[in-house]
Length: 136
Image (cartoon, rainbow, N blue to C red):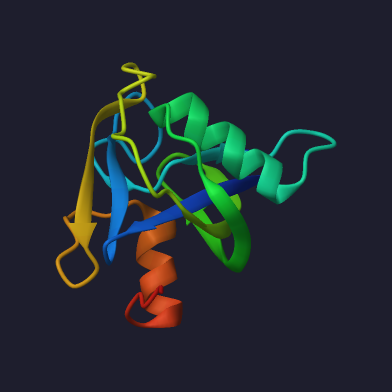
């Protein structure tokens, strides 16, 4: 196992009572569905990271990012440990594009009561710890 604990930022984009999820490829959690997000960079605020990662991954511009919760995610098979800081943000317009085809197969909006499977570990932990997602 890698001895470093990394900080990830997951961005819950909400539109019409749906959230945006992408199917991961080429990294830990391959073939699972996850929010846009990535690593917090040195000197960056959590909100700045959320804005940057969503733009880099989807081409979308988000507004009003706010911290909501965090999860403690241990990827045993991959030997990785993350603390994932979840941010909720609005994304009033635009369609997600696959900006990093080596990392994401597709972006889709899902109703909160009809999320796809399998979910990325941080999303599984988020649901376990917080019950149903209910973002307004």
